[in-house]
Amino acid sequence: MSYFCTVMDNGFLPQLKAFLGRYKYWIVLALFLLVILVASDNSLIKRMVQKREIRALQEQLRESAEQKRQNELMLNDLNNDSLVIDRIARERYNMHREDEDLFIENKR
Image 1 (cartoon, rainbow, N blue to C red):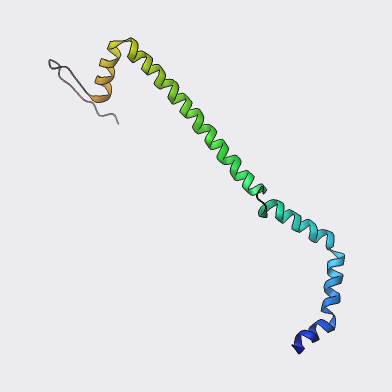
Image 2 (cartoon, one colour):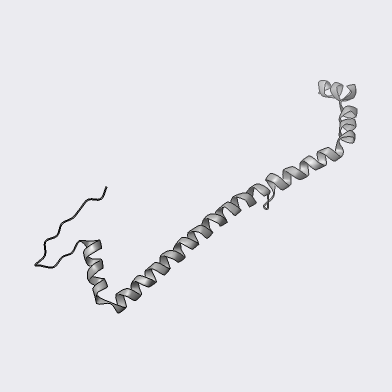
């Protein structure tokens, strides 16, 4: 306890007050920037991460819309043309008629 009192009596407290008095605006500015950049719920770092997530989700939404459009076109073709069903069965599922031979080519 005596060491602490000695340090406080030897000018630490007045030096601290002088330091805080001299740099109080810079300290407040540093604390403000710390809160804005890192500590708050609306910090700039979180906003940057959220903007990146938004861009990724928008891209995923565009891809899903394109896939939906292609599926609707295929559904329309399937409902209107019976030959489309035959073509899709042959191409995708390697189906063939009984009187046909099927040759499968590996694409590399």
